[in-house]
Structures are given as structure tokens and as C-alpha cells.
Length: 301
Image (tube, rainbow, N blue to C red; front, side):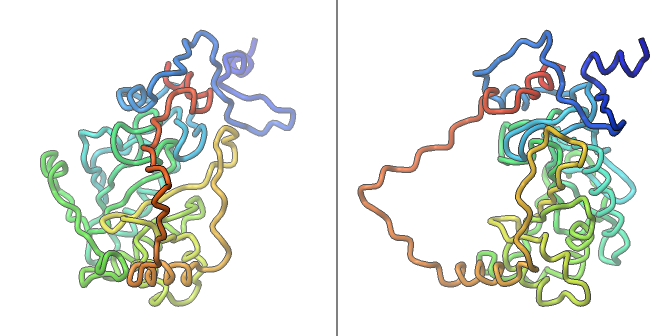
């Protein structure tokens, strides 16, 4: 039996009639299924990646990843932050995108590179604390503040990120500069990036300042928070059949949508409340049964 056919029998390689390579869903053979387990406890305490071909499984907020790579804690143009969280893992293309952003940052006179916040856990999945997304290795948080680099481990745990918003996010503050616009644009112009989340005032500022080709602005979407960092989200890779894609952003540059967010911040619309409406229920924790079946095999390896 050839090596390729042997690996295919193990579910590690897909053979197709046309010869194109698709990432297979890992086999559940021999895996003990734990349907009721709290997924965040199981994935949050898994210290190493699954020894399987690199692949995302599920949606950004309900999934996992196999074959993750670790962003080195320190590189020539970046430093990973909050190392105790063990969240500097991602799929290889995400790491490549982050490193590309870091080089664009280092080329700007205001900075030596970037500080990288949370990416994903070693096997993705729901996190013990914080993010609802960042589960399939295609999300990364980039701090907005210029990086001097050279921080030791203790400093990386304790240094505070700088906020760039004013008026609850309706506007940027005086610290906002061409550096922040440079690194956001560097991310948005990478064809592998699908979306960038940042506070509304920042999007409006970039809309006001952008010249020439404005198509990259479509990917920059206003969202709550995100005034200390911006969130980079990659598209599902073409060969990742187990990845659940997000709907593409609406047509256009999205600038009017961002301006509407600003108007709503400055003049909040009335929020009628039914006094007889039931109190909102806390969000239910994800169990293994909520995740794609492939995540059982990812967890077991």
C-alpha cells in the first residue's frame, strides 16, 4: 500500500478524482465522545494542538481547529502579549497575516512593530474567559498602540493597552494617528482577511481620510468595544470543507453605516421596554454536543 493511501485510510489525507487536495474531517474511530462536557473547560485546559492536518472546523464562535501553529512569543517586528493565557495559537495563514501586519507597522516611523493580543487556544474551541469567537484559528487581536518591543514576560502581563476612543467611541481621541490607519489598512488589504472590527469613530475617521482605492474600507466594520485593539478575521480557506463561512460584508464602503453608529452613540434611539417581558436569560455555555463532530477528534489528539 502506498504511503498516500495508508494516510488516507487513517483520515489524514483526502483522495479525490481530480487530484485536488481537500482537508478531511478527522475520524472519530477510537475516540470517546463526551457530549455533555463543558467545551470551554475541555478546550481551555488543553495545552497542546491536535496532531492533525491544519484545519478549522465549525464557525468562528462555535468550533475548533486542528494542527495549530504557535506564533513565536517574540519576533523581529512583534511581541505576543498576556503569555499566561496561552492564546498565541492559530492556523498558519493567520500567523502569516499577523506577521505581515507587523512588518507594515515596523515600516512606519512611529513604531517598531505590533503587540499581538489573543489569537486562539492550542486547539481553538470556546475560551475559559473572554471572547465568544476566536475558536477556529482565524481570528487575531492587534493592539492599536505603537510597539517599542523589548518587553519582558512580566511587562507583557501587566502593561495596559491604550484607548483611542472619545465620546464612548463616537470619535477618535488625540492619540489616533496615521499609524493606526496604516496597520488597519495593511490588514484590510490582505485578500485572506474577511473582516476587521473596530470602534465606530475609528471607521469614520478612516472613511474621512482615505484617498484613492477605498475598497478595503468595506472590510472594516464598526463594533462595540475594540478601542484598545482591532480584531482581524480571516475567511474560511478554500480547501477547508469543515469551516462554516460568515456572510460577506454588505456592498459598498460601509461608511454611512459607521456614521449611523456614531449618531446612535451621540443620540441614542429610545429603547421601549415591555414591563411584562421576561428577564433576559444568561447565555448557555457551549457543550461538546454544540460543536462540530470533528471537535471530538481534535480534543482527543
